[in-house]
Length: 139
Ligand code: CMP
Image 1 (cartoon, rainbow, N blue to C red):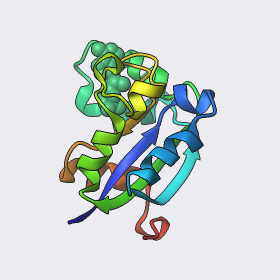
Image 2: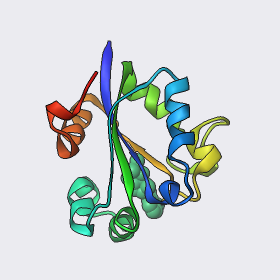
Image 3: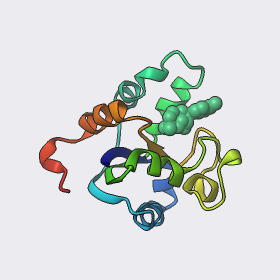
Image 4: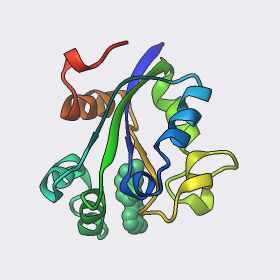
């Protein structure tokens, strides 16, 4: 089925001018960028977005990092978009990411791992609504 998923190009990638290179990977995989904006999160906004991780030891570091430079938030649309995006991203830890994936090519570490993508239909809907109104998504 055609799905939508939320993607974030993270600060380590925007700092290194990799937005276009990462978008090229999405488009080559058949994912359409149907909404996109560059924003700078506050630490509080990052904390709210990643609230499910708040008991994890890396939570504070994660929120500091995500608010350290601009991010590009985007909605990707396509057949099986949630799973397809996770394939294109590769494993969370770049040391474990498959050849040709975004994290294998660009990520610096498990924390500075260049991209975020929703992990399931329910989280995709909630994460898209966190950043976008329906009017901003043009399929
Ligand atoms: P993401 O897909 O955005 O979801 C949660 C993020 O937490 C994850 O990618 C990583 O960037 C980060 N993360 C996960 N595990 C660790 C870790 N062990 N140390 C630092 N950051 C982590």
